[in-house]
Length: 69
Image (cartoon, rainbow, N blue to C red; front, side, top):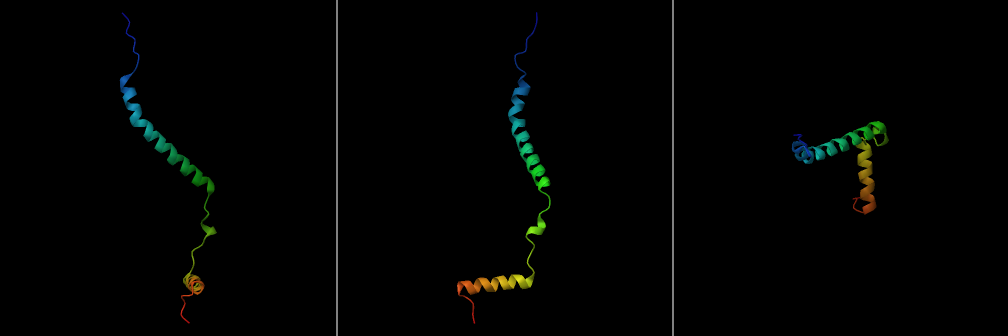
């Protein structure tokens, strides 16, 4: 007599547990690859030094009319 397995039940029950994990890992890998291809663009928006920050703040106050003269 020959036994025919129609389904491997441990595999069927494991797929719902592992499939979301593989999807999450795939998304993370895709984001990392995309970020690596972009390169370092840190020089596009340098930080303001203290004088530039105060000048910007003063201009914003002047535009709003809140500056004291």
